[in-house]
Amino acid sequence: MKRINILDNQTAQLIAAGEIAENPASVVKELMENSIDAGARRITVEINGGGIKLIKVSDDGHGIYREDVINAFARHGTSKLTNSTDINRISSLGFRGEALASICAVSKVELLTRSREETLGTHICVKAGEYSEIHDAGCPYGTVVSVRDLFYNIPARMKFLKSEIAEGNKIAALVDKLALSHPEVFFKLVRDNKQILCTPGDGKISSTIYSVYGKEFFDGIVPVDYEFNGIKLEGYISKPEKCRHVSRSMQNFFVNGRMVKCKLAITSLEEAFKNSIMVGKKPCCVIYLKIPYELVDVNVHPSKIEIKFSNEEDISEIIYSGVKRAIDKYNLKTFPLGETENSYLSDLNSNKILSLDKKLNSFNDNYLNNEVENIKNLVCCEPNTFQLDSKYNSCTKDFYESIKSKTKKHKHLEKYKNAEVEVIEQSNISINFNLKEIKLIGEAFRCYLILQYKEKIILIDKHAAHERIIFEKIQNQSYKHNSQIILNPLIIVLDKNEYSAVTENLDLFYKAGYEILDVESGKIKVKSMPMYEEIENLENSVIEIANYLMENRQNAKPQKLEWLYHNIACKGAIKAGKETSKDEILHLVKNLLDNPNLKYCPHGRPIYLEFSKKFIERQFKRI
Ligand code: ADP
Ligand code: MG
Image (cartoon, rainbow, N blue to C red; front, side, top):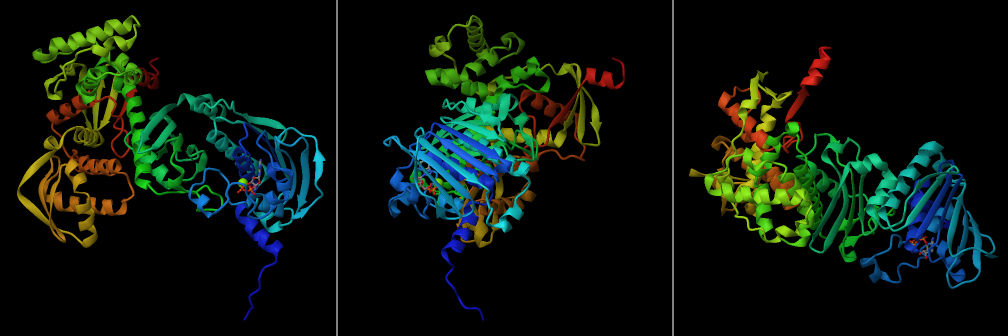
C-alpha cells in the first residue's frame, strides 16, 4: 500500500493555482478585480496571443506600499480582510489572498506599483515563485501587473487551452462583463495591439451598455428599477420581441458590483418573461442588485462567481416583480394586432384605465413622470368612437377631452394634479366594437381560426388564444369572480408531502379560486374551485399543484401564483381538435381585440399570425 506524504510547497502551490488560474480569462478576471478593489477609475487591459503570451493590466488605483509587495505575492496575503469576522461582511471583490500567489506560480510576473504616499515606484519580477530584487522605478501612482508565458511550467494545463483566438474571445467577453459591472470605471481592452473596447466610465449604466453591446442591442432594451425589503434593483432588460434564441450569454447579473452566475436570478428573470416571449427564446439583461453585504455569502467558490443569498425568496421576488413591471409597462405602449384604433380602445376596456384613474386621484410628481407616456397613448383614441354607459359617458369623455387638449399643446402634465375622475367599475364600460370589420372566413384543422381584418389575414390558434384570455381574466379578477362553490365539498386524501405543500399554501390556492379547508392530517376539503375547472378534474388538479409547490419551494409567491393561473387557464381553454361554435369563436375574437397586448399563450407560443394583403399579393406576383 502507498504511504502518505505531505506535498512540497511548490507542488501544493501548483495544485492551488489550478483552481484560480484556470485559463487566461480567469487570470484577467483576478487582475481586473484587484484593480477595481484598489479604487481605480481607469483600467487598461492588454493581451497578446489570447493572453497566453501576455496579459497586462494597468490601473490608477491606490497601489501597493513597497514593504507590502512581497506579502501581496504570498499565499493568503491580503489587505481586504483582517480577521474572521470580516468574512461575514465582504465588500471587496477579492478576499482570499490567493490570486497573485497562484498566478506567479504558473507564469512570469512583473509588477510595477506606486502608492500615492510614495514618491518612487517599486519594480519586482517573480518567476515560478522566485523573486527578483526589488528596484526603484519612476512611474505614476497605481499598479501595472504583466503576466507572461502563462502555464509555461505546466504543460498539462497548456494542452487544455483552446486556440489563441478562442482564449482571446473568452477574455473579451469577460472584460465586457466586468466593464458592465462598474459603470463608474473607464475600461479599455487592447487585443493584439488593437483597441476593441472602451467604456466612458461616466457612471451611467446606459452609456456603458451602449459601448459594450452597441446600438442595436441598446435600441432593444428597456429600463428596470425596483426596490423591495432593503434591496435595490436597477438596470435594463430586453424588449420581449428582442429576446435571443437559446443563448443566455447576454444575461448579466451583478450583486454589489460583483458579476455573478446565479440560477435563482436566471429563473426569476425568465419566469417574468414567460407570457411575453416565445418558448425557447431567452431574455437579455444587465441587472444590478444592491443587497446589504451581510445577506450575501460570496465565499462559496474559489472563483467567487457563485454566491449564496440568505434571503432567496426576496431576491426571487424582487427580480420577478421588477422585470414583470417593466415588461407590462413596455407592453402597454405597443399595440400589436393591427395597430388600429380598436387596439388603442382596448386599453380602455381593461382595468389599466381603472388603475390610471385611481392613480390620477392621488397624483404625485413621481408617478406623473412615469405615466406621461401612458397618458399620451390613451389620449390617442377618440372619445367619440366608443360608447359608454350613459351614466359614465360624460365624465369619462370630459376627462379624455381635457387630457387630450392639454397634452396636445404640450403643457406640463402637472395641470392634472387636481383632475377629478370618477373611478368606474370595469363592468360598467361597454365598448361598441366594430365587429363588422372582421370577417370570419373559417376554421382550419379544428385549431386555427381564419379572419380577414382590414388589410390582413389573421390566423388565430384558438386554444392558445383562449388560454391566454382566461389567464388574464383570473389574474385580474377577484376571488369572487374566479371561483364557484361546490355543492358537495370534495374530500381529497394526500400523501404527507403533498398535504404539507397544500396546507402551507392555502393562501395561494385561495387566490387562484380554490377554497380549501385543512381537515385533518392527510385530508383536505375543497369547498370552492376555479370557474374554469371541471369537477371531474379537481382532485388531479389539486395533486398536480401540490407537486409543483413541493418541487418549487424556492420560487417567489407571485411566480407560484402565476403557475397556478397557467395551469387553470390551460385546462379551462377550448381545445384544439374540438369543434367550437360560431358564437364562441366571435366571443374569442372580440376578447382578443379587446386585449391587443396579448401576443403569446401562457406557455410562450404565439397566439396569432398575420399576413398582410401586400405580402399575399407579392407571393402571387400581383405586385
Ligand atoms: P486578494 O485580492 O484576495 O486580496 P490577491 O492575491 O489578488 O488577493 O492580492 C493580494 C493583495 O495585493 C491585495 O489584497 C491587495 O492589497 C494587493 N493588490 C493586488 N493587486 C493590486 C492592485 N492592482 N492595486 C493595489 N493593490 C493590489
Ligand atoms: Mg484579488
